[in-house]
Length: 157
Image (cartoon, rainbow, N blue to C red; front, side, top):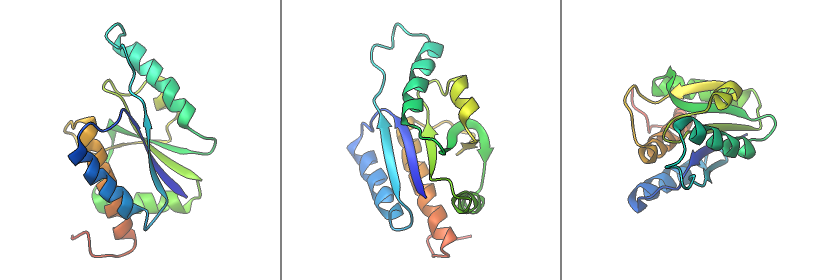
């Protein structure tokens, strides 16, 4: 079982990247984890939001493998408390997909074709966060979920 966070565009802040790297390193003590970065689209000023989402969808599909359990990080997805997310993750990891791929979309969200291939959608909050901060928040939540599943003292109820 491997967890993958698929994102569009690189992290632009060194400070933010350092935090992401710290949680990613911690995560590897529990489960194989990778962050795969799809290069940001160029020359998008001439594209509509739908055209940009369609082009991003093509790039996303190229990164997916047969048997992946695809989970979109989307504002319209299901919100969960950290303990509930840990339980959810534990169940998914126990069902045996080779990879769980969590995807952060581009600035306009996901193309309908990506929504259609996703097994699930998760929302981290009703608030909107930058794509840079979502990476920090989500890697931290993955780490927190792993510590909860192992009964370690990182999370306090």
